[in-house]
Amino acid sequence: MSDVYYLLTDKPNLHHIFPVNFIKQSGIASQIECDSLMNIAYLSQITNLKISDKNPLDYLKEYDEPGLETVLHSHLIPTIILEWSRADALPEHALTIFIEERVNLLLEALRLKLDGIEFNVFDMGSRTDNIHL
Image (cartoon, rainbow, N blue to C red):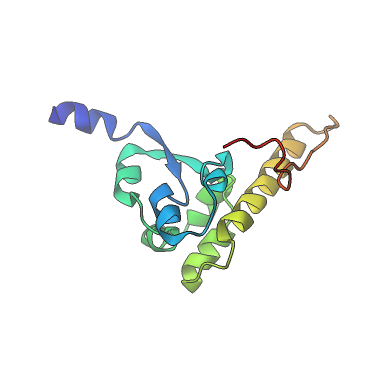
Protein backbone atom coordinates (compact mmCIF):
# COMPACT_ATOMS: atom_id res chain seq x y z
CA MET A 1 0.00 0.00 0.00
CA SER A 2 2.74 2.48 0.91
CA ASP A 3 4.56 1.74 -2.36
CA VAL A 4 1.44 2.69 -4.32
CA TYR A 5 0.97 5.87 -2.27
CA TYR A 6 4.54 7.02 -2.90
CA LEU A 7 4.33 6.05 -6.56
CA LEU A 8 1.27 8.26 -7.03
CA THR A 9 2.49 11.30 -5.10
CA ASP A 10 4.18 12.85 -8.13
CA LYS A 11 1.26 12.31 -10.51
CA PRO A 12 -0.55 15.48 -11.58
CA ASN A 13 -3.77 16.35 -9.79
CA LEU A 14 -6.38 18.95 -10.58
CA HIS A 15 -6.14 21.62 -7.91
CA HIS A 16 -8.64 24.39 -7.16
CA ILE A 17 -6.51 27.49 -6.75
CA PHE A 18 -9.25 28.80 -4.47
CA PRO A 19 -10.08 25.46 -2.78
CA VAL A 20 -13.73 24.36 -2.78
CA ASN A 21 -14.09 24.08 1.00
CA PHE A 22 -12.31 27.40 1.51
CA ILE A 23 -14.84 29.03 -0.83
CA LYS A 24 -17.78 27.34 0.94
CA GLN A 25 -16.54 28.34 4.39
CA SER A 26 -15.68 31.92 3.46
CA GLY A 27 -18.65 32.48 1.15
CA ILE A 28 -16.50 34.50 -1.24
CA ALA A 29 -17.93 33.10 -4.46
CA SER A 30 -20.67 31.14 -6.16
CA GLN A 31 -20.47 27.43 -7.01
CA ILE A 32 -20.19 28.34 -10.70
CA GLU A 33 -17.07 30.42 -10.05
CA CYS A 34 -15.69 27.75 -7.74
CA ASP A 35 -15.97 25.13 -10.48
CA SER A 36 -14.66 27.41 -13.21
CA LEU A 37 -11.86 25.97 -15.31
CA MET A 38 -10.06 29.24 -14.56
CA ASN A 39 -9.88 28.15 -10.90
CA ILE A 40 -8.04 24.93 -11.79
CA ALA A 41 -4.34 24.17 -12.09
CA TYR A 42 -2.29 20.98 -12.17
CA LEU A 43 -0.14 20.19 -9.15
CA SER A 44 1.62 17.10 -8.00
CA GLN A 45 -0.59 14.96 -5.79
CA ILE A 46 1.62 15.47 -2.75
CA THR A 47 1.49 19.26 -3.14
CA ASN A 48 -2.25 19.16 -3.65
CA LEU A 49 -2.65 17.10 -0.47
CA LYS A 50 -0.37 19.47 1.43
CA ILE A 51 -2.39 22.53 0.35
CA SER A 52 -5.73 20.81 0.96
CA ASP A 53 -8.41 23.42 1.75
CA LYS A 54 -6.12 26.25 2.84
CA ASN A 55 -6.76 29.86 2.08
CA PRO A 56 -4.73 30.66 -1.07
CA LEU A 57 -3.17 33.62 0.75
CA ASP A 58 -1.75 31.21 3.32
CA TYR A 59 -0.50 28.42 1.07
CA LEU A 60 1.08 30.82 -1.41
CA LYS A 61 3.21 32.26 1.41
CA GLU A 62 4.71 28.79 1.86
CA TYR A 63 5.83 28.75 -1.79
CA ASP A 64 6.73 32.44 -2.17
CA GLU A 65 10.35 32.15 -3.23
CA PRO A 66 12.33 33.57 -6.15
CA GLY A 67 10.96 32.04 -9.31
CA LEU A 68 7.36 31.61 -8.12
CA GLU A 69 6.15 34.44 -10.35
CA THR A 70 7.73 32.69 -13.34
CA VAL A 71 5.96 29.44 -12.43
CA LEU A 72 2.63 31.24 -12.05
CA HIS A 73 3.14 32.97 -15.38
CA SER A 74 3.93 29.67 -17.10
CA HIS A 75 0.59 28.28 -15.86
CA LEU A 76 -1.29 31.44 -16.84
CA ILE A 77 -2.04 32.18 -13.20
CA PRO A 78 -2.36 35.91 -12.51
CA THR A 79 0.32 37.16 -10.17
CA ILE A 80 -2.27 39.40 -8.55
CA ILE A 81 -3.02 36.46 -6.25
CA LEU A 82 0.60 36.58 -5.09
CA GLU A 83 0.25 40.31 -4.43
CA TRP A 84 -2.83 39.58 -2.30
CA SER A 85 -0.91 36.90 -0.43
CA ARG A 86 1.97 39.26 0.29
CA ALA A 87 -0.47 41.94 1.50
CA ASP A 88 -2.40 39.29 3.48
CA ALA A 89 -5.71 40.58 2.14
CA LEU A 90 -8.27 39.20 -0.30
CA PRO A 91 -10.32 41.92 -1.93
CA GLU A 92 -14.07 41.68 -2.20
CA HIS A 93 -14.98 39.46 -5.17
CA ALA A 94 -11.42 38.09 -5.25
CA LEU A 95 -12.31 34.96 -7.21
CA THR A 96 -14.24 36.96 -9.80
CA ILE A 97 -11.25 39.28 -10.25
CA PHE A 98 -8.89 36.30 -10.40
CA ILE A 99 -10.99 34.52 -13.03
CA GLU A 100 -11.22 37.65 -15.20
CA GLU A 101 -7.45 38.17 -14.97
CA ARG A 102 -6.80 34.53 -15.86
CA VAL A 103 -9.16 34.66 -18.83
CA ASN A 104 -7.22 37.71 -20.07
CA LEU A 105 -3.93 35.82 -19.71
CA LEU A 106 -5.38 32.86 -21.61
CA LEU A 107 -6.67 35.09 -24.40
CA GLU A 108 -3.29 36.80 -24.70
CA ALA A 109 -1.56 33.42 -24.92
CA LEU A 110 -4.01 32.35 -27.63
CA ARG A 111 -3.42 35.56 -29.57
CA LEU A 112 0.32 34.90 -29.50
CA LYS A 113 -0.04 31.24 -30.52
CA LEU A 114 -2.61 32.02 -33.22
CA ASP A 115 -0.72 34.98 -34.63
CA GLY A 116 -2.41 36.04 -37.84
CA ILE A 117 -5.54 34.01 -37.20
CA GLU A 118 -8.54 36.13 -36.32
CA PHE A 119 -10.84 34.88 -33.58
CA ASN A 120 -13.72 36.41 -31.67
CA VAL A 121 -14.32 36.37 -27.95
CA PHE A 122 -17.84 36.25 -26.59
CA ASP A 123 -18.18 37.21 -22.94
CA MET A 124 -20.96 35.10 -21.47
CA GLY A 125 -20.05 36.01 -17.89
CA SER A 126 -23.03 38.26 -17.30
CA ARG A 127 -25.60 35.92 -18.90
CA THR A 128 -27.71 33.86 -16.55
CA ASP A 129 -30.59 32.86 -18.82
CA ASN A 130 -28.88 29.66 -20.01
CA ILE A 131 -27.50 28.54 -16.67
CA HIS A 132 -29.30 25.62 -15.09
CA LEU A 133 -28.28 24.51 -11.64
